[in-house]
Each structure stands twice: as structure tokens, then as C-alpha cells.
Amino acid sequence: MSIIEIVIATAMISMAVIAALSLTSKSQSQNVYSRQSAEASKYATQIIDWVRSERNLKGWATINAKAAGTYCLNTIPSDFTTLSPGACLASTYISNTIFTRTMIITKDAGKIIISVEITWDERMPRSTIINLELTQW
Image (cartoon, rainbow, N blue to C red; front, side, top):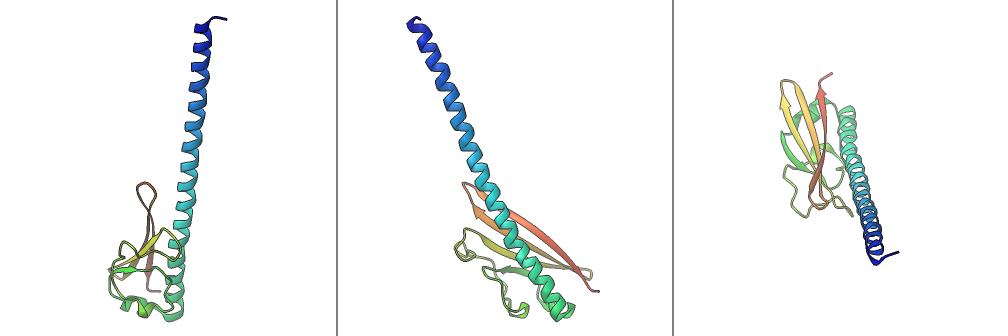
């Protein structure tokens, strides 16, 4: 075997190892994103379920009385009527997480639209949004 064959074989093996390592790195980053996206959906669903529960317990009038606007929800409030409007600050995270949770209430012709957005940074800004449309029964 000549030295040129050895150099070529070494180069080919090196390229294969580099390709495998690159694939592993990409797979790990996709795994992290998938886990964070699932967790964000869970936090958004918590608020959607809470709003439905509040509507069922307190009635349409209580939900409809809340002003349209943006509400920062780093915790789940104990009562819908105690919500105060205001956007989340950059450091307003859900406790012990990397996520911020914002609820936006809009009203349109007898409907209330609740949009819950979960945002986080994972090498770039990411978000998950879940919408709920409520109507009077």
C-alpha cells in the first residue's frame, strides 16, 4: 500500500466521521426544540383550560366584562376578575422556566377570542400560539 492510498483512505474516513458527528449534533438540537415546543404547548393549554373553567364557573358575563388587551400570566391566577392588563417584561418568566406567557383578549361581534402565546429563546426567538373562541351560549 502506498502512502497516497493511506492518505486518501484517512481522508475518506475523516469525512465519514465528521458527517456522522454533524448529524448527531443536528439531531440533538431538533430533540431540544421538540421538547421545548411540547412544554410551551402545555403552558398555553393550561391557560386555555383555565379560561374555559372560569367561564363555566362564573359565566359569560364575567369573561365578557374583562377589557380587551394583553395580559402577562407567569402564574395561573386564582380568579379571572383579578387579572390586570400589561405586557410581559423581558424577565417575566413562568417560574423556573425559560418561557413567558401572554394572553391577548380581543372581542368581535359577540365573540371573545383568547390567544395565548408562549415565547422563549433557543438560539433564536421561538413561540407557540393557541387560540380559543368563546361565544355566549
